[in-house]
Image (cartoon, rainbow, N blue to C red; front, side, top):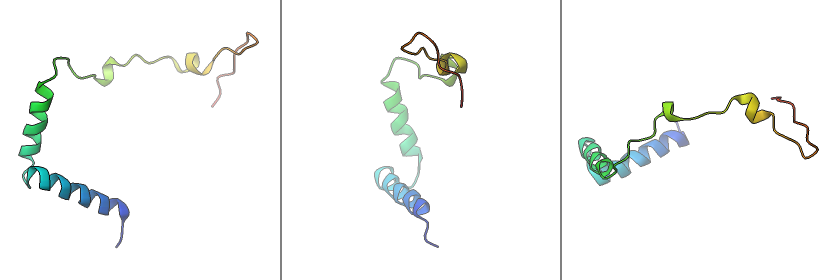
Length: 71
């Protein structure tokens, strides 16, 4: 079976294994050290300020009216 997605996953796994070895603990340690260099906390999904969908879809038009909130 020839699946390009599976082939790409295998290619990336080989690249990671070449850089960090077959044990992924080295990769985890690498990213833990990298993360410790940053003082700010990471942005979480709960930190997002989303706009109400009607406010986003109901945009003003040049003539002063507004567009209908349609999908």
